[in-house]
Structure formats: C-alpha cells, structure tokens
Image (cartoon, rainbow, N blue to C red; front, side):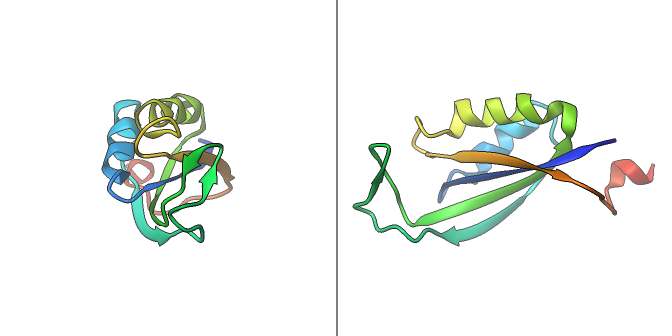
Length: 103
C-alpha cells in the first residue's frame, strides 16, 4: 500500500492537537520533534507572527487518507489558529517495521 509522510510544523505546545486531528481521520501515531525557527518573534509572514519555538510532527499515512488528514490538521492547528501550523507531504518509497504490515 502506498504511503506518504505528512510533516506539520506548529508553534510549541500544539503537537498533541495535530496528533488528535490526524488520529480522528485514521492516522495511527506519529513522532514529535522539538525545533527552533530562524525568525525572531517580531518577524511576520503573511501578517502572522512567527515564533521561533516549534514542534515538527511526522506522520506516515496511507496515501488515500493523506488529504483528509491534512485538511483536519489545517482546521484544528493551521495558519489561522494559535498553532499557526504548516503541513506538507512527501511520498514514502518503502517502510519497514509497521505493526499493521507485520500482521
């Protein structure tokens, strides 16, 4: 089954909200990485303040669920929310170690 990696960058403290949104649409889990942006607090991007403390949420999903999951993440933690999240996806060529695949 084809898979994609959804990467979402949000303000620190909003990664759990991203995971809740993804799980509500069929994702099984993900990985959260603490990160730091290169902009300072006063910089703006499309009139939105950019905070340097971020979290990156990595979620591997079945390709047919990708769009619906990304839309739900956008609704709950997208640019127009306090999470100010940005999501994008890339195709995954191969996966090993997923429990679902082992059964």
